[in-house]
Amino acid sequence: MSISAIMGISFSGMQAQQTRLAATSNNVANAMTPAYDRLETDFTSRAQGGVSATVSPSGGPVLDDTSNVDLASEMLSLVEAEIGFKANAAVWETGADIWDVLLRIKRD
Image (cartoon, rainbow, N blue to C red):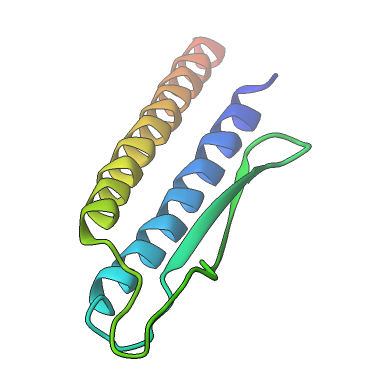
């Protein structure tokens, strides 16, 4: 597997976590909105490598005067998204560092 492929995979992971963060933020913002159905993010691996994220309503029970958002679960999701993004960013940065070393070797 090439360095650019690994960096592409890590980039898709960062994009997927960004999508998750947007959905979670929307849930927190609408936690007190009557009849709001929380958004869920599903991750799917790609055949060529990487991951994609899909956001859809949970389809869970929603009462007319409340939402089905659990703020504790949403905070956990925010922390998980942060950790996932940081992990993918570390892979991206390592790939960029390796790329720089290879370019220096080629110039010398």
